[in-house]
Length: 275
Image (cartoon, rainbow, N blue to C red; front, side):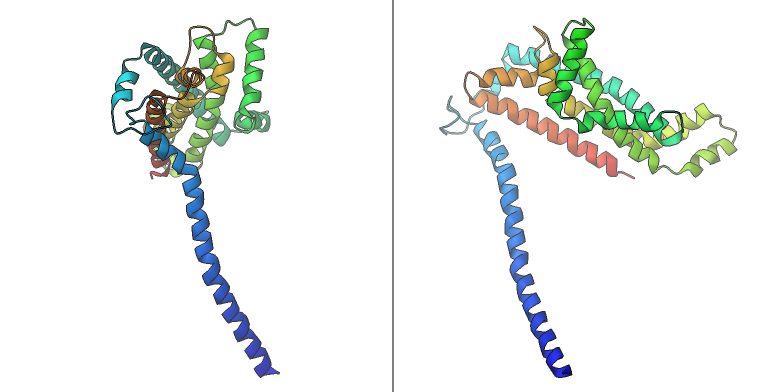
């Protein structure tokens, strides 16, 4: 009986090793196929932005022509200026509000804290189209004229949640004994915050600000619903250009936006992991 059990165990072990050797390459192949599916269109877009042809579907050689056309396009320049203005102002406001909200939620207990916490996460959970419609109805009911001002308010409404999440994680990992040591050395609350707390959470604040700037710069749905005439941003400009056909100029613009977004996101992740 013991020998039979031992033989059965050996057979199952060999079978398990055989299955393991078969499954591991299959999982690796599946991972590479997923990466190919996700990133191949991005590589093709960047490649065709250097296409000499005016048609995006045919390759006629390497050229920087469409980047020159892009930099000389006044409509693109105006849309870029509007996007940068909206992103900078909304990031500044959202960073201040999000940081204060993170400190309040992590450090203090107050009436309605649970409800406030839930409301703060709402813009992250709610579908973007639903939030866009709600903001548009709010501006209509309050008789606020649509323009860059409404776009900035809308961007602050969802960006501050992302800032609060990032900063709150940094505050939660903060060593409170450092603040207590500063107070033991006769520093008041403001001096402790300015010289100890703020420098320690600054990587989280900068990371949240970069994430907010990226989200604001790339946003289309909420901007489309809350913008007014003459206040076109870059994503909306790209959408309008695509209606007349995809050209290498759109590929060049998309490639530059992609590179800018990737750089900002990588910088944000690096700052979050910085000790």
